[in-house]
Image (cartoon, rainbow, N blue to C red; front, side):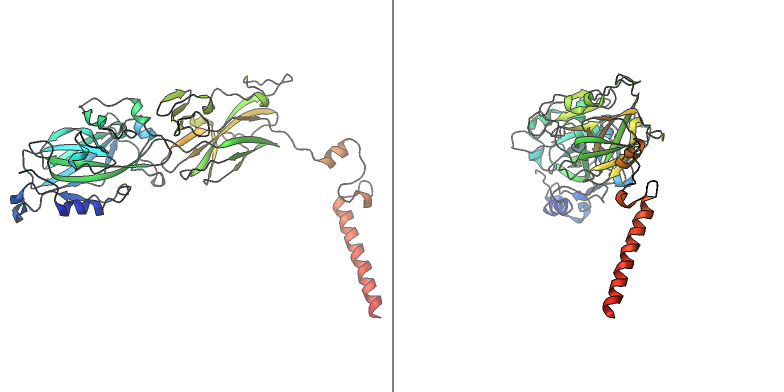
Length: 431
């Protein structure tokens, strides 16, 4: 008799799996599946799998522990760096009451992979895909799953994904990290299913929800750098993107500006701003669904099929040595830059190239803004310039101030004099 997911088990799965999946790291649902009518008796009612909700992470060699991100950076998700490093997620399973002839299959996808229609061609989908080689029955099973096996079909819901068969020691290439077309986490679920001899009927299954987020937020627009004394006043326009959690500020010291306008580091003038290390990601030509790289920037696609800096999504990989500071807040629009990444203050007369990139709550840094190049300079106001040119009158209340007298003293004397006259006039009216 053909086995099917029991009604109660399916309902249990749906209750614990809302529209976008479990919260990552939540307690995992255990799904029991009745293989046939005989499985309804008490002796087999405890069929099931449990998955330890604590999933160890290792480097791609499978043995070196991989450092977890901070708690505020969704450490249970797969971000771009996790995929680029092809980390291994180590799942620990325990089964109860299953046949020793069952085979463990591990699938992932945006839909319920326990449904046969998600695992065989000839249906409309969406489809799931295998993320680990099949394993023999075992009471306790350790299942290593490579990050790229999970991420490689993020943008493909066709039946083509069914052709992929994971093999030990072989995983997809870096293109598996370039399958996301828009910012924000994508909710997937990994399913662990013990199937019987026909390799399609599920006897028991358990699921583990996981977010995948491999592109940073949209790049800030219209970056400008205003001049201050040993500082630059940066302003930009954030794009409308709910994934933005803040902005990173990058700076390159291009050296002192010479008489001919050139710099010690060969940097260009502010009107022709270039940098070899703060890559202007908007010069990269990309097509929808395509992947390309440009220096320190990985661009993975343009959502609407156009080629536009404001629409491109991807990951900035600017060297952290150029990170001068960060500011929290998805709507932040300005930053006062006064120190270099190594703590040294900015110097008047030195040109600096600056760029800004937004970051999200999974640790991804998006594409950088346009570059801005500028040199700090001492700010001279009108009265300082007037005095330096030989002007003798004071500032502010100059028409009432004796040459050389402090402006504040003249102003205060004037105010007190006016108050005294008003007081005398009031006294005379009362008489």
